[in-house]
Amino acid sequence: MNTATKLGGFALGLAAVFGAAYGVGQVTGPVTTVVADEHPGTVGHAPAVPGPEADGSGHHPDDPGTDAPDPAGRQPGGLLVADRGYTLVPVDAPPGEFAFRITGPDGQSVTGYDVSHDKRMHLIVARRDLSGFRHVHPELAADGTWRVASPLDSPGVWRAFADFTPTGAEPLTLGVDVTVPGQLTERPLPAPASSSTVDGYTVELAGTPQPGRASTLTLTVRRDGVPVTDLDPYLGAYGHLVALRRGDLGYLHVHPEGVPGDGRTAAGPRVSFTTEFPSAGAYRLYLDFSHGGKVRTAEFTVHLGDPGSIPAPEAAGPDDGHGTPGHGHD
Image (tube, rainbow, N blue to C red; front, side):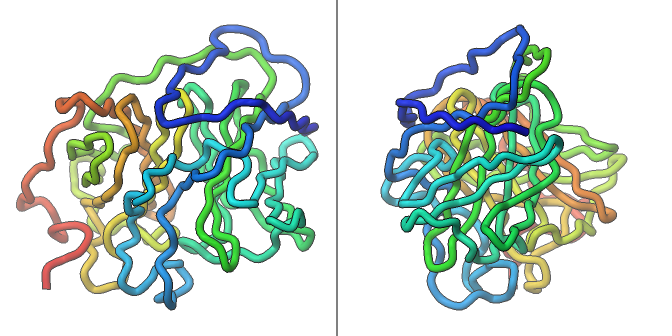
């Protein structure tokens, strides 16, 4: 993969929600990376909670693992290639491989990273039309280069998000556009729905998120109609939720309430997340969950500003298996 990097003179703000522009056509030439100008104040996560971690998962003992709303009202993560002195730098790689490095305030490659949810680097990629999504974990070389088998599996314009915490610094999410050549067609965003089916599993989404306000989303996992009560711990949690805003692909990575093994958190069927969506608009939600040793992704479209876009949370019923998700009652 020959990666050409071009700095573009644009800044993405909360109100700048605009559609992907490629449509039907042919993309030719080498894979190209396009990045945005540095613009301070972009965050993908709330600042890290100070103090000792409970374990190698990256959780603070008193932190439920959710991404709290940013008190400064800053932008969601992933809109910028550079923030707070750190820059995402694509690296030339052989075909079939994706490589990059992070440079720090001193201009040198960063080699020290904190573990967050069992990994030092989370790489999330999504096509600009939100029709493709992958969450992978690159390997770090001694020179500070991250390498992984390319998760870009179809032609189109992709956004790559590097989600990480440099040692001694706050969590960051940096983003860069990558164009994969070939015949492509822009795909319309699926209509909002409260149910998603993947690989024989049905996931129900409940909650009424409102822009600019903290809200709780609950996802219930069933297999062949039977509640799943033995979800696998995956990256230190029973599920991971990524939300991408249509247009600029503003990024939210949310961790669920509770931690596996804390004595309070059920292993399904329900997994709850509390987060704040920064603005009205259309969002695509991706839930990663693991069962039977395999990770699956359930996808949803949510239109914020439309109260009827998804239903209110359902009351607990006799088929709930382990009971209320997240923090249990003592």
